[in-house]
Length: 242
Image 1 (tube, helix red, strand yellow):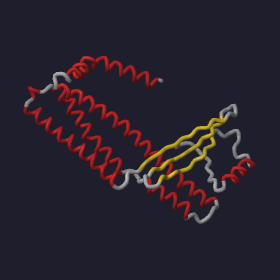
Image 2 (spheres, rainbow, N blue to C red):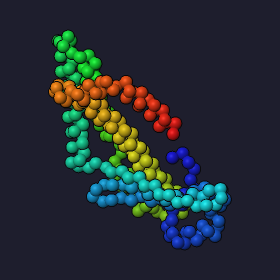
Image 3 (cartoon, rainbow, N blue to C red):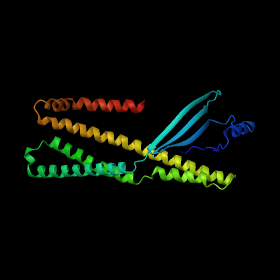
Image 4 (cartoon, rainbow, N blue to C red):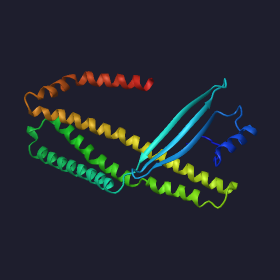
């Protein structure tokens, strides 16, 4: 991911490590030695990139760390269910926007403009985000395809000379890059999904205003809104700085 590496495939680990020691493959210029592999869990379609890093500091101390990135493909019924849920959510939110707009146009005098505008905004967010998630998800390369390509590269290799080894290494790092990109994509959408859920939770609190007793929550949020904004601004600054 932008860092130079000197990759070697350990076909016979014991013999290869001894050969590396004899030629002093690890020298004073070496910062990190990494052992990396890919693990596939059958039937559940889980793909894991496992990397063990041995970092060497200026004093010669060695510190080990493990980095494991896992991605799961949606298959068969799961794909259909996921796409259907996103489509239904977006459609229902769009109908809510239409009904709110018609009511606002017909009876503007009975509307609390602050709550109504926030409701339209939250429903618009709930309508647009599932569509964006669905479109970006359909553009992802199935991990099974990449993993099968990598496996075929190993199985169909015509030799163990440098050119064939380099082709195998290129395929290996290509699959690792896809796993990294799709995992990063998933993390970004997790953050966006949390934000959408928080907006809907706040909208749910506003809906409590219809009940006399539950309206106490709405009144509390309204009176504390100024303090909450100041707190979140201060918290965000401290979080970014630290």
